[in-house]
Amino acid sequence: MWIPLFLLAVSAPLEAQDPTWRKEVLLFWKQEQRDAAFGHMEKVFEARTVKAGGTVRAFGRGKPLVVGVDIDTYMRSQRSAGLLIVHKGAIRLEKYGLGHSAEGRWASFSVAKSATSLLVGAALQDGAIRSLDDKVTVYLAAMKGSAYDDVSLRQLLTMTSGVRWNEDYTDPRSDVAKFGATNPEPGLDQSLSYMRRLPREAPAGSRWVYKTGETNLIGSLVSAAVGKPLSEYLSEKIWKPYGMERDAIWQVDLTGREVGGCCLAAALRDYARLGQFVLDGGVVRGRRVVAAGYLEQATSKQADIGAADRGYGYQWWTNADGSFEARGIYGQAVFVDPKRELVIAANSSWLQATDRDKMSPERAAFFKAVQAAVDRE
Image 1 (tube, rainbow, N blue to C red):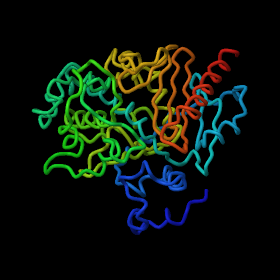
Image 2: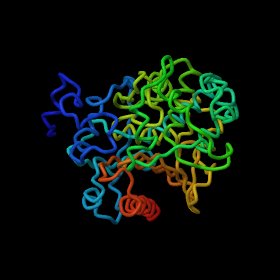
Image 3: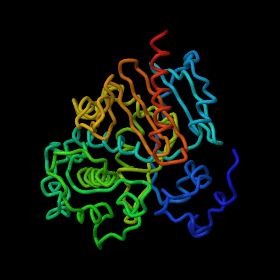
Image 4: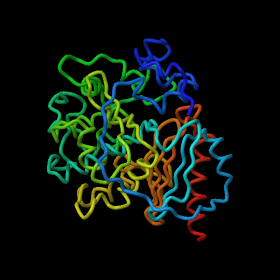
């Protein structure tokens, strides 16, 4: 695999070698920077390791799935780094592009939100979180006196807090663009410091607005509740016992805390195993990891997002046919269809953070084509 020389030179951070690599402007990197870095994010950002165990949960090998789509053409169009289809626990298709391979990690961006949601379910099972209806301030005292005083964990999970936030990936003045570059208050982690300054714009529970910052808060809350970093808790609860193949990394903020709403990087097969873990009901070798009933709620529509056939659960995007997805900007996805026992993992490097006109509809059509191919068998 060819790797640009500037990625191999690790004697100094990339942003020190080239000022265009400033961390806070990831959304405004050039395309060649994204292509080079998405598979090597630990060379750009500080991160913690999510350790895998010694025993790998192997997938079976099924016959190639006839999707009825030219896979190479589709992957080129999607600027795909990896595409994996697992049906009934067996790999039916696995291909890589952009110089990526099964041995590498790829940035997930907001797919991490769904992993953070799974850790909420684990903390409920462990008794570290008592109820989703607890107020945020029960676990994060620093949020007292802020707009989050009357916001519950359930409202954070469904992004219905009513607190104002701008998620415009094209606007350098948006909250999602500014958050990572804002110096935290002394003694507070970056998420708490930034989020407690935000004003309220609607009553809690009344309106859905997508907010990466709120998943960052969820991550801080889980970490405070369990008394461990998110990377350690994810390794302990899922990565090791479920048999992930490779270590993952989780980006940390300026205060050294994992960014709950973003930036877990893992191997493509391990993203698929994350979907398979959900298909298995959050149970590993007969031991319940995620609280009973949590996944059913997390992966079903809890909030109206203004689309008749889609909704939002607890950090999972939901579809009317019962399937659901973890999604990240620039084309990352883990698609799960319980009815068909189907998982599709996709890594990409789209030209835009989001593309509702071409890339997203094309990917959605491909997922439907895969479902149809399974139904034809």
